[in-house]
Length: 253
Image 1 (cartoon, one colour):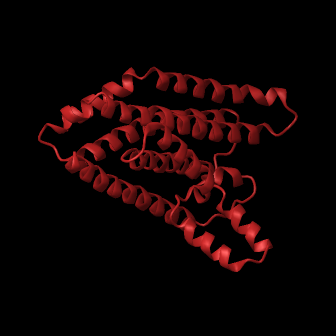
Image 2 (spheres, one colour):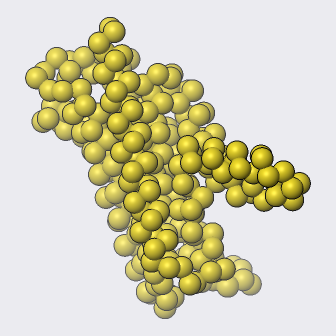
Image 3 (cartoon, rainbow, N blue to C red):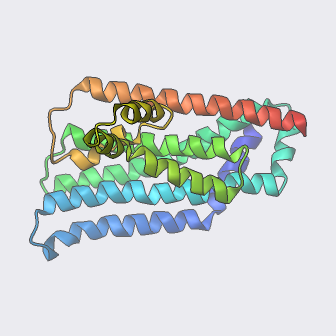
């Protein structure tokens, strides 16, 4: 366990691209605080939308281009075999890797979120429950994306993993648009098929409440509980299949 933890920590600390993402994330987020002086629109909406969007966008880039690289470098540089030669189970390797990557994302997003909430308080902007849940759901979206990267990396190359993850991310945000389109064409069969297909994809659209903060305010707590549970189950399911494929791959080698 300690070897996995230490190795993962060293990889994260040494990755300069990660620091670049963190730097630009904070620069763009702080820039939003000054942006209200240059616009005629509501500065409250700009600050909230900008912060929430930047936190998500920068860490999508981080998950796809930093975390996936760290995972593939271990395979290419054969360091994974040194770790697996120790008396540890292969499922422990996957789980501890995922845990430490997740912990890094959590700590940095927590820092950004606290800074974000401080700015809202400084600007005397009301911190609603939707803003807080939007931050929580952003973390779940990134965790799901990370689990997708782990899953796809067991049988795909680095480039294909990134491309497929981006495709899944885009499609998962577009199901309601696709369903509405086919409803207009009155094609019930395709609508039903699309709804079934939607179950296989992550619930990114449901977790994307930052886009409706200004449209809806009466979200029920059941909505948040259900999507939190669904997200956790989706992550566990992907990790379960990741471990199965990873075990089979090793046994064949």
